[in-house]
Length: 123
Image (cartoon, rainbow, N blue to C red):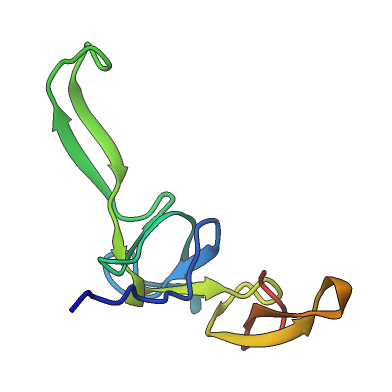
């Protein structure tokens, strides 16, 4: 039996907030500070996302044609999708995602994602 592809709520280009893990929110002067970033790539089969500027790791590379100097390269590593939430466009807080149908062009119904906190449409 073939494995069914997972339906994820997060897409490439979404602005997300990291809520768990190494980049978890911390308190600064009594205010919660979140790590934010844009989704670069989504790995649905592994249920992971690559977030810009988050979960930075160092890779040691030997000299090659592309990188004649070699050395230590710092790049992003994927984060589990359960550790990130969509950033609400209105309040800039983490929010859950809902789906609803809106009237599109030519009077047809279109399924869109919306932020549960503010009700604003994401797509």
